[in-house]
Length: 392
Image 1 (cartoon, rainbow, N blue to C red):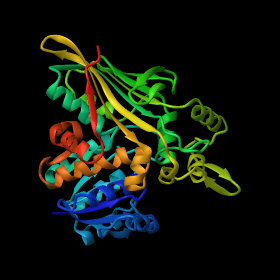
Image 2 (image 1 turned 180 degrees about the vertical axis):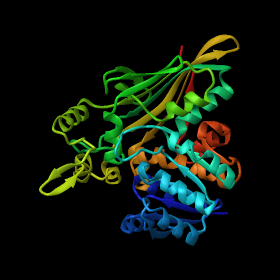
Image 3 (image 1 turned 60 degrees about the horizontal axis):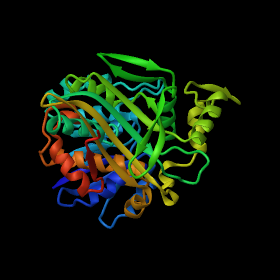
Image 4 (image 1 turned 90 degrees about the horizontal axis):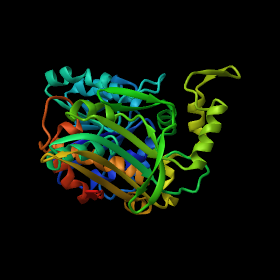
């Protein structure tokens, strides 16, 4: 029986809260905190179990420390913004509480995936005798676990990994993002990058693309991006020679994005407007639909998985593992669309494995460093069944 503090009340925070409430034998007490208490209240009112709510500024370590000491949780699940990872980690260090997040830290003034800032906390967490798990969403998260599972059960050596993320859903808006618009657009508009033969190769944004026939969806054009799980997998999957991350986009989405870039609305540097200093991308975020509001009319499916190639018993082998998730089914269950669902469910499972002592450690870890088997066993149980095949 554990007490959990969830920080962040967006779409993912709502899913994590719902899923923790579905496991009362593990999470006996749930506290949901956000800068905006009204968001917490809305989530709380959807759940039949008692959920405590609180206000906290996740940019303020002193406020976080005070809340953690008041709540006395066994674990903090961070589903706030990536900018706030370090302040929350600082608060967990100060209070001696375990930590889990779903996305790596990003500085506000630079769109950059890099785990170094958080990996640098390893010795401090180790000395404090507490555990931090990084990137326990879907991608990163489940995709990392898929790779660890493949290495443990299906390969002697992994040589190539292609992570492929397809959202074939329709939400009815001309342009919207499936998670925080500011983070989403920063991610997509930066230069692409992939790992090959021990080095990183950069590409122009969205310049490399190809078609893939996704199960239960069909052919979709997918574009090469850089994504954070590549960095940790390069360190933790021995012998891998090439890794790439791909994501699908509709032509309508890309056209809107190009126009917004051309007029300067995706800039993250401050500009002066009528005597005020604003960040164009933050202003755009205020105009776009709130991602947590998309679920009510979302239809269609997502398919996220890994195509892995390597050697087993001296022979080449190809392996494909993936999950398909339905937007409408997610909304019926937890009032959220599938992008939030596929991120929130793994965060709850990771926290469950930590507080029950199945995943143990002192320091800072990525999920692929943990035993994948108990995690994989719970994915289907909590709504994310997976399929594995061996393509010719």
